[in-house]
Length: 115
Length: 114
Image (spheres, rainbow over the protein chains, first blue to last red):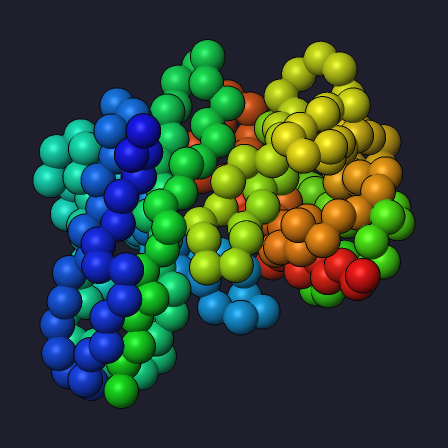
């Protein structure tokens, strides 16, 4: 059972470089999310996608873009990385609907360092 | 708007002692409540959840939580801590029938001493 798979697990970038974090889920979930986790800040929502074809900003969207490529995949792009984007990034998915409670299933995280 | 407050960013207990991690929430409608656990260098995984019905909810690894509407609380407990319980714990709330975006607390790091 793969669940939610994120790649890469580790990445070091120089300021100004771009990169894309990939996320895929095999649970046929409608909704997908990108969070960042920083010490003392908990989890902060960057972007989410309620369903295929839709994306919306979360709490901290500046400096990021997302693409919901299909129902399975939801990517996060940093166009011009900054040191403030050094963080651990988590992708999550959930099944939503009137009969679902919407708990999230998380990937193992992608650790990004921007020098 | 909904919010979650976890009292104490760090909680330290001895092995075998009671674990109590506190979570208070605010929500304008009946909530769905969750506890997630994050072991070092891993993603979060669901520990337990409250939706409707019985207010005492049992989860994995001997943890349980009680939904107290009058206190707007959902505290997590375990009678006897084990070294393997050392982890980060997150409380989360989502409005039932409403927004699909859960709100997370800032997390509590549980430290277990031998």
